[in-house]
Length: 163
Image 1: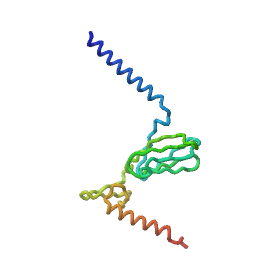
Image 2: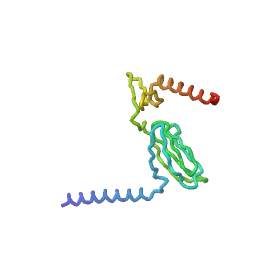
Image 3: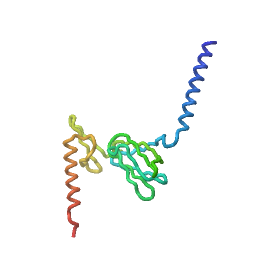
Image 4: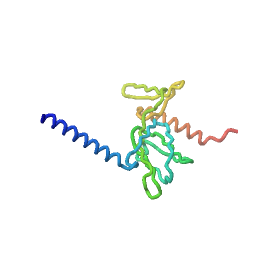
């Protein structure tokens, strides 16, 4: 009988503790419970901002970036793998929105990763395979693609318009 009584006390003690913990967590302000945004690397996520937003803060701008657009829209772009946070503040610094931003790998089926020993190269294959600048690729491959892309973009910006 005493074993049964001890078991009941233990059960109700744990149940009471869990119930109190749920009650305490349930009373936290909304700003303390961040919602999660998932965005793929090099992709965007559109979010509607609450009224009265004056400032947007990104915890780590190497993971995600945010741009305010007209009509109260915020465009979040995945810049690097990982998780950071996004805050929307009013004019006096009050938190209007607190969201966690998780940046995942490319979410497409057209990505092909080639390993040559410890060297890694990434290709976008839709419909033909072309080199792609992707975080995690081998430095020589990544830097060569980045230099080529930068040179191409530089030429496009300095070329005179067609006649």
